[in-house]
Length: 98
Image (cartoon, rainbow, N blue to C red; front, side, top):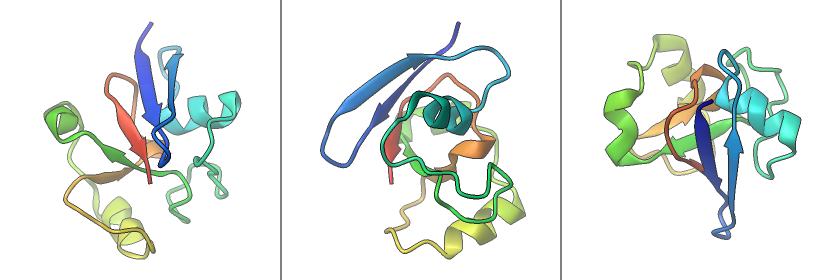
């Protein structure tokens, strides 16, 4: 079973084993991980599931699609080269809460 570690802004880490086919966002919401709200339910509309993928894990992350890029452009959080929508991420890397 894949494992994901969420790192909150205060440094608190939450590690979850995630069932195959479950997104990083779904697992966070189901488990009550602070900072992952997912108001739109994962339809890539609101950015409340936006996370930062560790730079050393980006190669394992699929290329960003245009709708994800446009959604992330509207976030109030700083946008380095590695923010992603957790609704599009499958397990296998560490993410930091936006």
